[in-house]
Length: 156
Image (cartoon, rainbow, N blue to C red; front, top):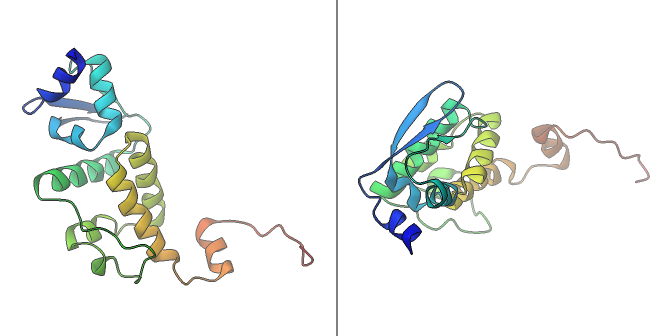
């Protein structure tokens, strides 16, 4: 019960996130969508900064931008599955489409961050972006995209 009170009374609290290079102070409203942060606060409260050394600064800034927009402006509309288009602008509003319009390596890093922080809506968004990229690609194009070597013989 006391732990639930910590989470319920968090509206004006600040959370410190620490990477290898920077410290970020984030409005506690982020906990509404990050299950990792929510569990951390239940266990340690607000006194301890949250170390996220496995997340690059640029990626963490994108995560924070996503969380702020998602909470303050609103979530994206439901992403249809299967995807009916390769154009993210047709699937989500321009902010979300622009947020994931980044190089492939950064997309993969953003997936890892969303997974680590347990932010399901961000994970869904980035996976949808990857889906739009690989949609209608040939096997060889997919191997090239994911850097997979074809070690199968002709017979296999």
